[in-house]
Length: 250
Image (cartoon, rainbow, N blue to C red; front, side, top):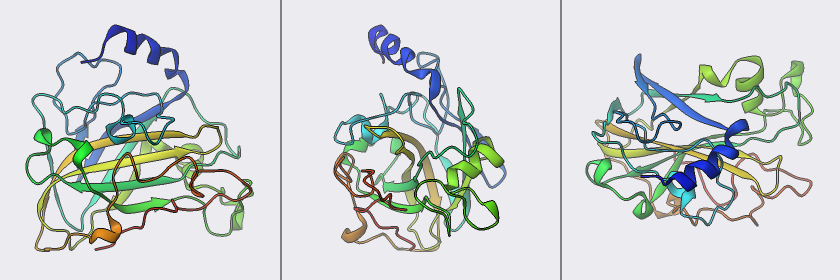
């Protein structure tokens, strides 16, 4: 439960930030956990979160955002390995089009080894299943790619389309059945310190596969990256992916 002091402090920073408001899986809509009403009873697959960013990748908040606890009662969304999940964002302002914002986006998963609402995410071993950043042919400074394509993928979602249409990614088809946390993250690199926006949801994966990623793909939060990583620091070059993690395709 959040204290009044914490909520009051974060409200001061909430005017220009956002997060995932809902998920779509196989045409089923799942409402997210409303950050602006943390004390109201909510049934959601999404863990508690707050609209303001995490600015320290070594903070425990990088793991499951502020609070990060499961709702009671807690829900898990069923999804078949190889199927798609769409995360639908909302925010409190509209980004101006064509500005040189730098926004890599990542998706991680972690095996809960049982019901995720009884699992401490600080103990999780995460593997990345999707990422996006610079579009093909675009340049670091925000110069559009071929045919005027915006430099960064999130600019397409935010400006030309809408983050409210969501980002759709695929669960690896060979992933072993079980209960998993899924961690969507946006990294805003146009500010210093950079701003991390992690959001979490609980899934029950059904599958005919039996694979889990090897140790080369596993990371912890905190620990997956630091402010000194090339994928985080802006020093003339911004990498399309985080330097310390590798996508597992299954």
